[in-house]
Amino acid sequence: MRTPVFTGVCTALVTPFHESGGIDYPALERLLDRQMDANIPAVCICGTTGEASTLSFEERDELAKFCVKYIGGRAKVIAGTGSNNTQVALRLSQSAKKAGVDGLLMVTPYYNKTTQAGLAAHYKAIAQQVDLPIILYNVPSRTGLSFGAETYAQLAQDPRFNGVKEASGSLALVTHTRSLCPKDFSVWSGNDDQVVPIMALGGMGVISVASNLIPEVMKQLCDLCLSGDFKGAAEIQTGYASLIDALFCEVNPIPVKAAMELLGLCSGHVRLPLCRPSREHLEQIRRELVRFGLI
Image (tube, rainbow, N blue to C red):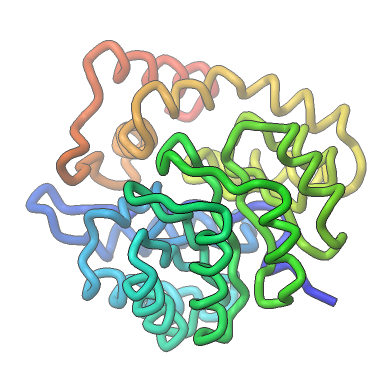
């Protein structure tokens, strides 16, 4: 019987940078304290929101070690270790395990892509050599490649695959996946605007961008779903729709980092090829923060 790596909210944590480009570890401490104060059960580092694609191997290793030590068991630490190069994904996964993380988040191979058979082979090759729970990550808008429900079902037979972060936007795929996979193969929403419908289909929570800003709200939303109060959860989901929309007015994590700078949590600096948001989008983000009483 698989136990979910986490239930409820896992915050897809931003990586705070100095304007000079290096990682701002004092700011990272503040961000982690914010999550721990909200009793968030898990954080994900080195993911899409953490700008993993522009982090060096050394930075990824340092981030994992730092977060594991600083959190000290108060929450689960999940590390993004996916790559379109199976050997690179393996190296990242082995290093994350050595750092003491609790689980791995592994995006599908991007750019070169593959077939469904290749997807299964890619993940199995890594799982055979890294003894940690693996969360599959499906985000075809980023990768140009999507899992099929049948491939989920194939991998779900191996208990090392804990579940999937589903960010395809397809509720039909979630439904089909739930119908084919064992009940202990977890599904987490990868989109903040689909938490309630995915949890209503049996999902275990969300890996969330919005919880960088509103961890208490996202925790309440998931707690209501887990208790079966989907009506109450839907009120929160719809009530915060405009803020969530603003956090995706440009490619993630540009808007959320701009918002966090406006809140004084960390610099809004992002690494190229990402750049600061347009004036119009920055004003949209500011309006939503004011509307929800965050500034």
